[in-house]
Length: 384
Image (cartoon, rainbow, N blue to C red; front, side, top):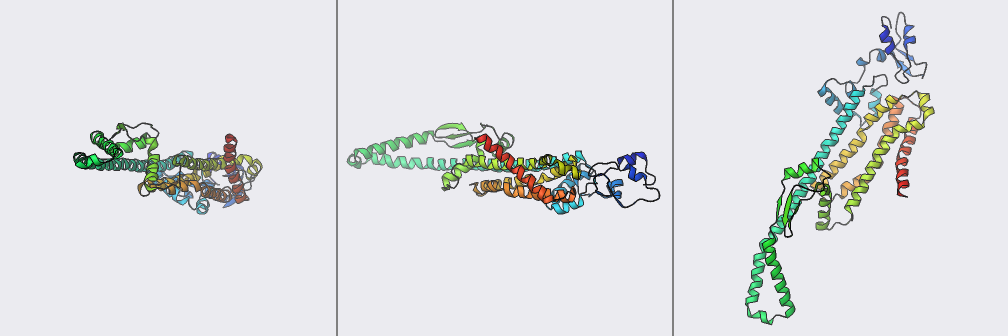
């Protein structure tokens, strides 16, 4: 380009392989062509995008935002546009410079979404358990209020002439029940000493705590409030006992297995881009750089994040309205398959439109199968 200085010339490189285009640009004398071809990897180059990328970068992309609020605003737009990968990778080109700091901020934005869902879900569970405890205490209080009438009815039987005519076995039963009612009337003072606010604070900030600061009073005396690590199990067990649902017989084991499915899916997502190591020949032919693979991976994080948000929403709804957790747990069971299908679609479109490699769908499917089988094989090996 006429009038370009040495610094500008040194900055012009092929967006795919990074080959220095200074020699090509130096041959321009009177005019600049609109496009050219990299002599190293054969990529068709739009020279205007390399010389003035700021005029062509998508303004909705978080990498090219300015300021704190601009980053937040474009992060939301980037997240929303990611659901249609064909349009996403058609607009975001390799010629646009990669901004590592902005990618890190985008990861922070996704983690912020997960943190918000975590707070909501834990708060819902904490409120539900607090409500269950209060409901149980009200039931005990109702039972205690009925004791004076029961004691009085038994005492009247003891004072009547009919008492001598009652059989010995029935007398023993009446005396035993009367003693029990009197004992319960004295000892049974149901109450919960734990506010909703403190229950939420414990659930959010100390989710794995095995003890609680709250206490509750029953006929057995004072005891600790349900600890944060047992909140989910408390809701499920209460529901199964009171409603007779037996489809999930072991809620703890079911939850662990469902979480294992989610971990499996997330590990598979991370292994897919690493799988490019297994394709050295194809990678060298296409001159694909790890910076571009990293960019695809970072933007692809919206897939596991979105599915985790859906799971959190399912749990919150299940705990608040239908606290059997069957729907949420079954959702976790089957969520890994659609997540990996979307991951394969994401990478197939990115490989074809962004990396401009041949056989994008075949490469993505192959890497996806490998990424799914590796953690499965490791799990089977460890279980032997």
